[in-house]
Amino acid sequence: ICIDGTHGLNNYNFQLFTILVLDESREGFPVCFMFTNRGNEAVISLLFEEVKKVCGLLKPKVFMSDMEETFYNAWEKVMGGADQQLFCAWHVLRAWLKNMKKISNKEKQQLTYKTLRVLMYEIQEEAFLSMLNTFMAKL
Image 1 (cartoon, rainbow, N blue to C red):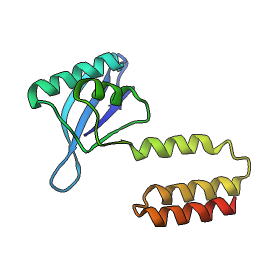
Image 2: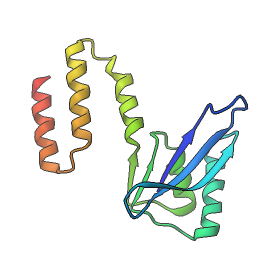
Image 3: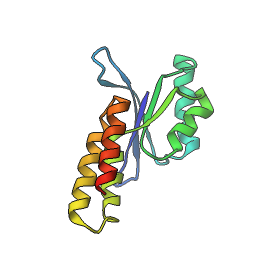
Image 4: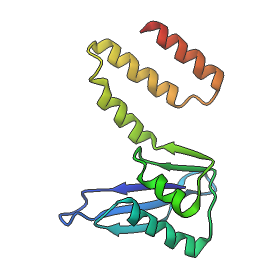
């Protein structure tokens, strides 16, 4: 399950929330939409309650959202937990870029961001740890 919110689409402060699931090609497929002027946990819980009415109790292996806890807290409240909670790569990269400013040395900024991007997509634990240790030694 993946949920994403889109803000600033119009002058009325409406937000679009979309729930996606993986299709047979393992691509995100939108299955539910909600327009609302509020995106707090109570409203997101209402969305998940409606999904539960139609689909029953869902137990996904993975729940993916932005880096705020609102979505996952609402999901846990309505459906229970998922095996894993992941953050959307786009939001993670954006947070890293924002925090790169804390590194004063521009070369270290570039090296850090480049290395983090590589580490983010490494799926082998040993390779990840090896690259991480090598990177940390360079700092």
